[in-house]
Length: 116
Length: 115
Image 1 (cartoon, rainbow over the protein chains, first blue to last red):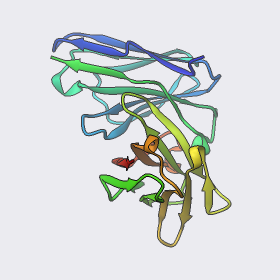
Image 2: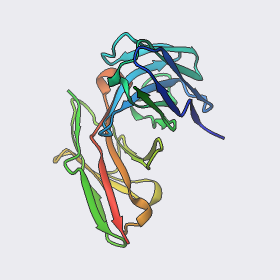
Image 3: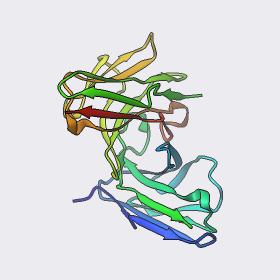
Image 4: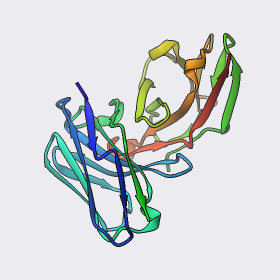
């Protein structure tokens, strides 16, 4: 049973296109996250959602629009893709509804986005 | 501002020898510290965390970490390295100022264990 799953695993697209990445967790967690890992493996938070509500938007361009239809899903839609968007995008989840400082995050396998 | 530093890009160790991967942190308030491991083409996996209590934290796969408040360090250790431990290791701190909803990761340290 996959705890945090992402689709697709690989995404190759042209500049200017719009694409979506889907994330689902079956852990019953209340908090979900999107991270971007660049080519140097540097990992940075993009968004945090708690009970479907956006909590953290870490100065991400508004071409990136997360959407959480329910607590188990957090999708990422990207408009007008740019070369610099090429990266690996990780979804993660953690349990708590509040006071998440001590929570372990569980990561999905990642989606490798390549913009040509 | 909260920050995490991993001063070594790469650590090389022979199989069977002890290993240490270094991490220092800077936080305002209580530190909530984590270690994760990333194998090639995989997501991050949790190893261990320090929230409160004993300074020596034991985690998965025989790893442990020592929280040192005076040196603001949280070094990852293992008494005897395995070739299969070769991976990318991330130290992270939960930002208490955002209720923990923001995690700041170090730049990662690549561990090579030679047979």
